[in-house]
Amino acid sequence: MIAAVSVTGLVKRFGQAEVLRGIDLEVPAGRVTCLIGPSGSGKSTLLRCLAFLEEATEGAILIGGEPLGFAVTPDGRRTRLPSGRIRAVRSQIGMVFQHFNLWPHMTALGNVSEALKTVRRLGRSEADDRAMAQLRKVGLQNRANLYPSQLSGGQQQRVAIARALALEPKIMLFDEPTSSLDPELTGEVLNVMRALAADGMTMVVVSHEIGFAASVGHQIAFLDHGQLLLRGTPQEVFRKPRHARLDQFLDTYL
Ligand code: ADP
Ligand code: MG
Image 1 (cartoon, rainbow, N blue to C red):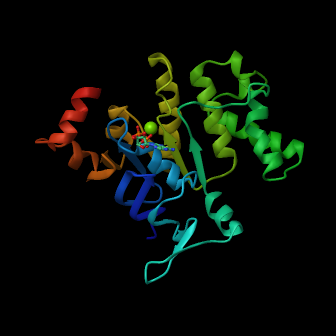
Image 2 (tube, rainbow, N blue to C red):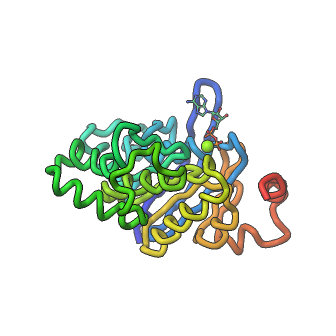
């Protein structure tokens, strides 16, 4: 089976700082990969590379077997792919951020349908129908005409998830989707993500919700100082005796 995402030897530098130091990771299709690790370990940078919001300095990323951004020749040279190819591969990726970044002047429905009209060039009624179907999926069909300021943080994040889903990605990336929410609102967002996972969506989730990672994650990857220290099933990674760095990390977050 072709991995949904395959990362080999990924290095990312910002100037002198080597933030990702040779990452190898396979994300199986239809499975949930949870990426955990201390603040500053490079989790967001890794997700941003997968979404091509950052360009890898070295290494290769394949999305469904297709190179993302660059092709690497057998002798190791990297050549940038034509922008049409990059767009086609990137369009398979949806991303949800910690800060939902909804358009404040658009309703929930408008936020979800906007890219369908401008990027997918759908007519208004088809775009609105599809957007409504996504809002229903996240349980917000009755909030479609409200503006972000009229929605709770959890509802806003569910709109952001619907917005990403509307573009029909094959892979969904989540970067700390509940970290800016009050604790009582995280559950509704995690439930939407749980349903998406049960639906067979391929997901990569950065989260400090260790309970979610342990119960929903098929694969756990522990990132520390730009390196993947551990990778395996939750049983393998969380089994005692635990890796000392992971133990230290869990102590600070649990
Ligand atoms: P995490 O998401 O695990 O907290 P990040 O990927 O955000 O970690 O950051 C990893 C490291 O990379 C940090 O030291 C951060 O300061 C640095 N970094 C991230 N983005 C940039 C950037 N655009 N320019 C320079 N340094 C960056
Ligand atoms: Mg981060």
